[in-house]
Amino acid sequence: MNEKMSFVRGIHFLHGWFDNDLKTLSFHFELMYYERNDVIYRENSVNDGYIYFLKKGEISLLKLF
Image (cartoon, rainbow, N blue to C red; front, side, top):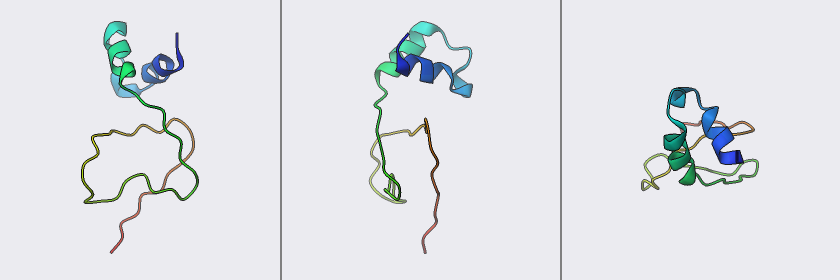
């Protein structure tokens, strides 16, 4: 079993999905690395089409005025 499939199987709201469906979903996953203080997404920016799942580490959500 590859790393992506292991990760997808661990996502709580995907429990109960068939392996074939999880395999199809994991095919579209892209592993991305960010450094401390990198901006991942800005509010009101153009939709980049991504859904982010945090595998390791922590993030901060900030509302800037």
